[in-house]
Length: 331
Image (tube, rainbow, N blue to C red; front, side, top):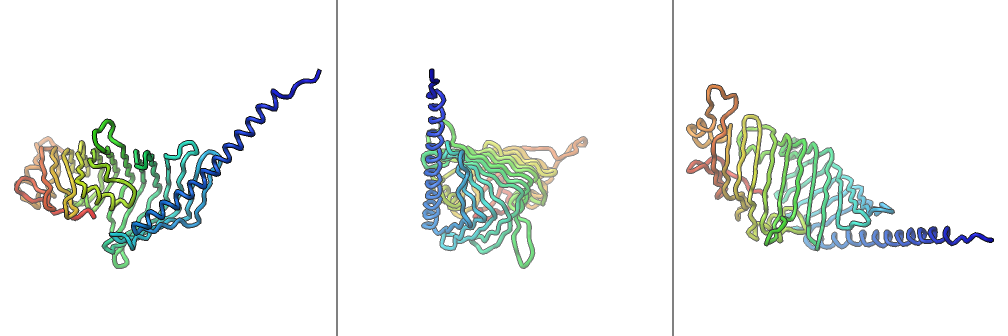
């Protein structure tokens, strides 16, 4: 009696059909990915930002969609605030069964020309981002960069603007919020910046931790970071700070508060908490206050942390009636 081959043929046929179907799905998805990139570049160009992906390639078969650019650049000479930036290879990946989750890596170095004409050079060891999009808007964003260095180029020389061994940023839609809000977390290790030096006085590297909630998240969307920041400012966005903590040498700052950006694009609001070792900052505003904050007992090896309340208004950081430092525009 002949043995039926149907039990063997049927699974093989189903597997072949599944493979063919998946291949068709992937090829259609790859074309959609390529068209999506082209559409996004067109929208960016409408806002004066012309992106270039050199030697663009779409791959990743069978389980992911991968976009690879040998180098990337953006020419914002026609944007509201003209700028230019270019960097090395870009690799962006989305799993074939999860289109809306994009993981990207960017290689350095990068060259940047700011709207004011200043030129910067940036290097890093590793830069990775993870973005989840739902309903056409960013629902979650994470980034990590290691050994970052940004220098201002001036007369053939370089002036450090920002250095850090590691910076992590996390952005999430605030769960259960009655209006669009975002939770922001930033952690910086061995971070040094001219902005931080201006706020705290002196120079040096330290660790930074920020936990905040941003209102008017509906103003944040596609586009350049500066454009997003400006839309958020114009919409009346505020940042409620649950923690802003800095430890740098003898300086220790741990505060909460609420901040916004004023019409001159400078920080405004009020923060309060504890501070230690700020004599180099307060020394500009008054020797008595500087001596008070740096007060030590005989057995103290570090400045004692004392209550502090700071008001940021009209481009100035004030402690009561004493002006501590002037603030520069954020952009």
